[in-house]
Length: 336
Image (cartoon, rainbow, N blue to C red; front, side, top):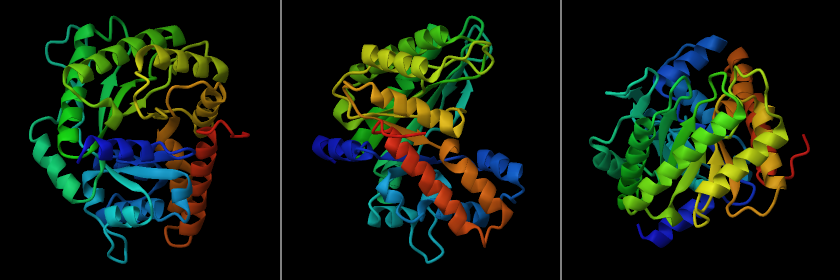
């Protein structure tokens, strides 16, 4: 795929008023979500739930694409249409999570430092995913904040892996979504989160440059600059919006097609309010949109669990409503 096609796909992912739904939970993670609402973690239940999400009527009005899991991109609707084909036929771009998860960083001086694995054999996996219909991919790095962490070694190791992954994606015709998540867990204040996020993004874009990744065909999935969950003083919506935008402006090149945010454990309405406030600031070099998982799904999953046959339409309505609210926030037009 040419750089023009990569750039075109990246721009479509952050089209005005549209964002990405993340439904790339691993089998272990979806098991926990299902267990919390009393649903058995079978392949058919996982397939049916993902079908509910992807076939929500009019979803493409506010959703440009979805990040799928390896199992999901190989599954089909109950009518036998592969999910990736269904999405493409309905104006949504199929994406795929390709990392193998975060593991303890060997040689790290402090506990809690992680590095994401999955580069071995990645080229061949990306080639297969492209054939299965994927047009973008996602790789998540995990940056924890704690006593004496993160170290420069941790940040640089994850930035290097993200850049290697991104270069391989573009070689195989896929837009890389690079996700360096600064975790909300902890009692750190918003200033600490700002410092760590800034250092992480500087390291990431330096690594992308060093490895000749074309930024025109790359999307950043970012965490917001926000107070740690355990911090006594929680920053308000305006401070989170201002801090996040300032941090992005100081680290993210303007040529990048767009930034999508993860919800990262924020409440549904909280994540929407933060995105809306950022877009109301105006004068942004790139579109700011969303790539939410839990914040798009939680309400729907609870409804569906009460009656997996009778409640499909009701659950889909909540998915549509959340997509619409976040789509409005991506334009700075959400009324709360």
